[in-house]
Image 1 (cartoon, rainbow, N blue to C red):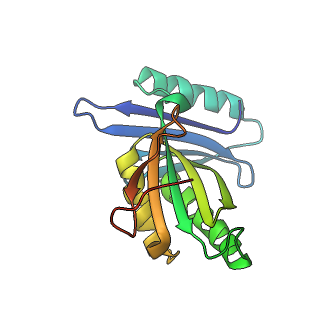
Image 2: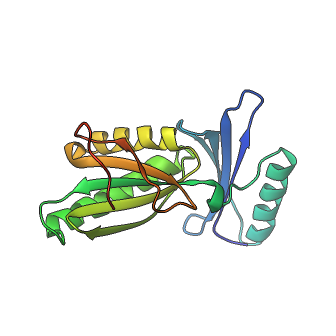
Length: 186
């Protein structure tokens, strides 16, 4: 077992919580991150000795999460949220590639530390930069993306955001646009 384990649970009030764990090879720390989806999480790190089984720790974490009512949300039950930037040229410039790198890095951190999902991929074409995020909660993800892009000073005035259920890749509905009445095209 390796990588990251991420699980979710709704409480009796319908609030979505998350827990995730991973092993940091460089520092030899077992990291547990948890909180309410959409809010800054809390993180706990434990230093792990050379003789400790990382697979055993990950399995124990997964078992405890399941016992506490947490479960993975399969991609088929999540949503695609696309952050789209209008570009000046069809295939993008070096400045657009800089925007792509920085926006992906900023969004990866913003979504991850709030249990809001992952950045799946990005693409440049047709005078657009599209950053695809897989998210369990559309509205909270859209708000987090807007805040992140604005705070990182990453062309907020060129940002549109749309969302679609995972299984409907052509069913995107516009959630944010710099222009009233604008449509959304990938």
